Length: 240
Image (cartoon, rainbow, N blue to C red):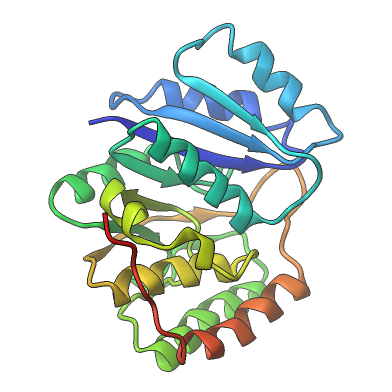
């Protein structure tokens, strides 16, 4: 089975090389696609240098300027489908998601899940080093999503996810509307409405040590209002 991990980056020079080494050290083989939105700190240049070490497994897609998390992932999904990957993973570059857990997400997919979510809240609250305000906002955002959409996912905003090829082929990626963290909710909701099986795997989320968080009030606001609109949208899949 061919597997690729998509990591969007913007100013991640402190983390990117270590992340590349860690992913490629795993016992299970994963390819890696870095999608960089014109990082002024030279993140893409570091990736290009590291491609000499991993010419067949490390890939780079450069875009001009910050275009949003959702558009980065959609570009990555299209790239992966064109190259016939069987499983496509989303993950942050800042080590808040433990790369070791990629293997556990993959195992859950092989066991039959169509979408596997690395969940902070499926066995309580597994978050390290977050301020209480942000923790409460994240936790109750997922509660809000469950109440509005009725989707049985405890961590709807999670950005550590595995999608099977079948899911990405069926979803109408052109119809995805949200670009920030609301994108994560919309993708899971669309897959659920189309009848795909979603499984949550418990992970421990650790706040980044270096670099700056990309969270903002605008991103949160888009997700809040976007969820209300989702509840009344008709989700149609593509025929493949």
